[in-house]
Image 1 (cartoon, rainbow, N blue to C red):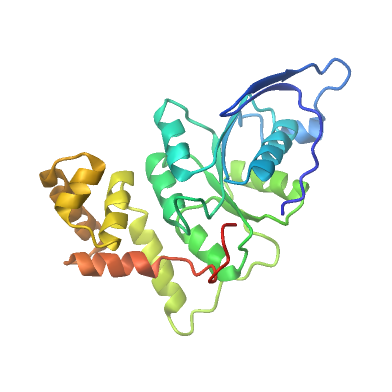
Image 2: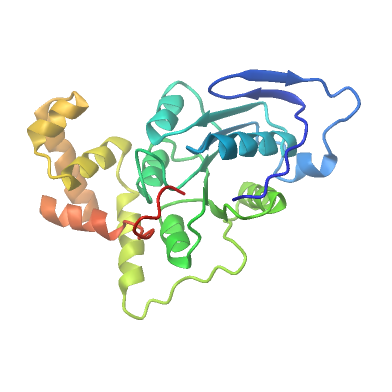
Length: 261
């Protein structure tokens, strides 16, 4: 787990359940913490389904950065709902595996919904191949959950300076058999899809027909057909089966029985 040192909060912490105000009468925020990621970061969305980790992470960010608002979500759908309600965070912190999505699918849908918002992935699955797939899918950085508090702050500092952040010791996987290149290419193609197109592609992967997709998403069947046509064009394929194969290529192998990160 990410080593989070919880210290008293000063200012306002807003999340999905509560707003708390704390009086900083005798202790202003440490100057080094305020400037570590730039004064421009005012709001963050934390997406993680583990309540203790999520709340500790939110508290740590509140003490380390000059934040006005921290909102949280425990599922991808919860995060998308928050983004749809005129909430435009300066950054999003995302757990890779959530109850309603696993692997890069959640990252891709968040990037499609908020393309200009940097997403920092925080996950217990820190293998090089996982990090490579995440970065190819558009993440601004990757932090392992066993990282220190300072590493998390350093990640924000580098990302806000325009860099990308990967953990110390990360080495891009060798491409001798071409497998890694296929995963990266699949992730890049998928990143061109809109949030709705990604959702439709997920339903195609489940084997659903246009009529079933239309019913589930409450849209017209002709709209589904138009989206499928656009999906095939953006992925550079001619059939639904080929589109599903590309989606499967981008799946990150997290290990059988690993559970959620």
